[in-house]
Amino acid sequence: MFDFIAALGLVFAIEGILFAAVPNLAKDALRSAAETPADRMRLIGLGSAVLGVVLVWVARGM
Image 1: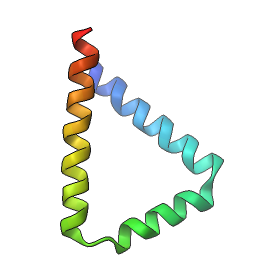
Image 2: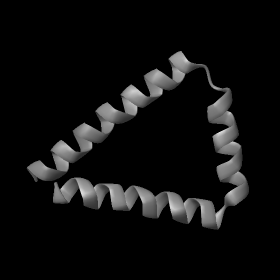
Image 3: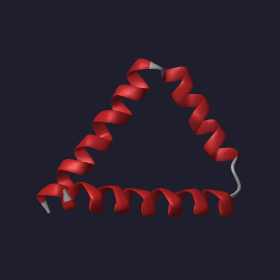
Image 4: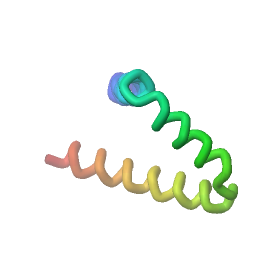
């Protein structure tokens, strides 16, 4: 559970830095995401989840 909370904290930190450093780019990215069809977003989300699990698995195995 500690690892999950740490990972969630990193997500918030990275997104916070993104919004603080380049707010216009972040707004454009959010606008683009809102215009993306749901089926494509689902595939992107699934791919990201698989990649994340693989990265954690590799990092924890080392």
